[in-house]
Amino acid sequence: MRVADQRTGSYAEFEAFVAGAAGRLLHVAVLLTGEPEAARRLLAGALARTYANWRRLRGDDPYDFTRQELCTAFARTGRRHHRGSPRTESGAGPGLLARLSPPERLVLVLRLYEGLAEEVTAAQLGMPVERVRVLCNRAVAALRSQEAA
Image (cartoon, rainbow, N blue to C red; front, side):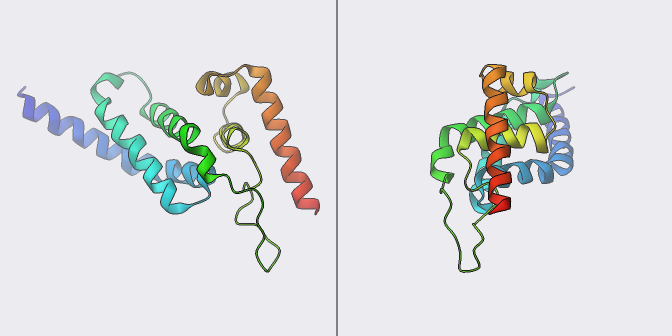
């Protein structure tokens, strides 16, 4: 098979992956950033890195790889997305997760939205399982107290 044919096949596989996974990955990015435009940029970077590594991913789950890239990028830039809890005139904040710190958001999104086990979340974020448990419990408690207020 010629190199051009291999690249075309790889690109078609990547396009199929993006068509199937981009919506869910974008939702993860929006949950993390709270800003649709920032989420798109974060996802575009993660997908670019996935495509750059596409041929090496044979046998690995490209969704897991892309989610890892997305989380890593958010962890590096998370502070710029952390707003505290500003309120609008209606009394609502800009997003349900706005009060959470970036690490709390990461853990909460991976554990509850993505459904990852504590051990997998810990491995993906490079932190101890106990830290994941504490961050998740703290984030859930903060959301519950926000809901009661």
